[in-house]
Length: 378
Image (cartoon, rainbow, N blue to C red; front, side, top):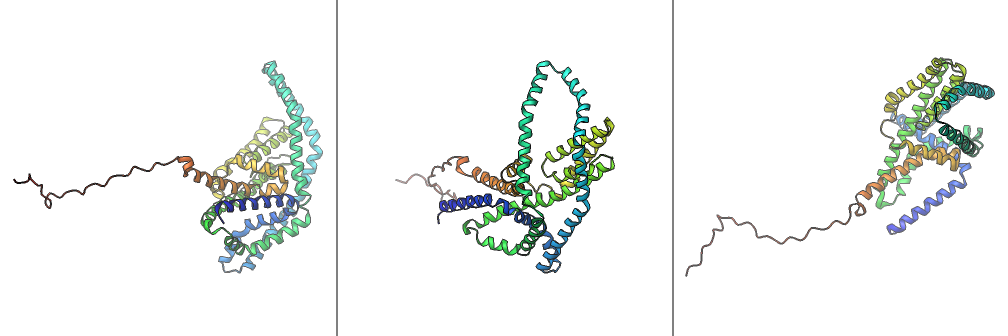
């Protein structure tokens, strides 16, 4: 098979896989979640194997330990989070009214300072764009929840996902070896190198960022609760959970925390304390946690991650969010590889002219062996 036919074969296979993924998206969610768990826990299984445990026993210990940790977290945190979320939903109308009353003087002061034409434009723009923005946000959230949360029921979460994770962990090395035998032999080394880059990127983001989110959730939850903020545990846990979205997660948590502090405390000191908690979390995360757990292994631009998450959620719901970062990592590595090939190709360098042929030169003459010849004698 020629290179051109190979390219078309892989392109057709990719489109067929994408179509099947789109059609079976509602069924694949627990299986994709199981694959993510298996990828996350595979280094632990390898570490136990190096301590002379069999693959089956190491897989069972790691999977059981992970399930117990998740179950313990659900037992301890879910009732508290549900209670605070329900209480927050009940108080939300009164919070909105109080926030509006306290924000009106600031808005009036801002309107007095601004020229009338700019103030009118801002008000008209807010009216024009508030409705479409709210509808888009509601539609996005509805797509994510409607496409995923109805499928991720108790059966898939507590039964299918752990089973899939266990069998994938048990057969991980054999699956990788089998897939390696399917690679085109002519390009096998190139594909292996790019696969290692993808694994390096994903391991840095998935494993490292998961630990960062867990630590930030604990820090924000405990910190906001200790300063006395109502629903501080919910706000803090939510902020830490969505901190894998660059800038967006921390910004949403801070806005929500400041709004609650403004309603609850009503003083600059109270708001400043809440802001200080978020600033301290960002300083710790940026200078200590992320450099140690993630480092420079990710190689994914924050804007690219945000776009991938929004596009995946809009197209496939919760399943799209699960696969957004792996797909973004694969595309990023492929684009960098293609760019490197382009920069080394004649398309970028242009036609390289070959140097003109050089005529052979006479070898240098040794004056001792070849003395100069005088004029011929008559």
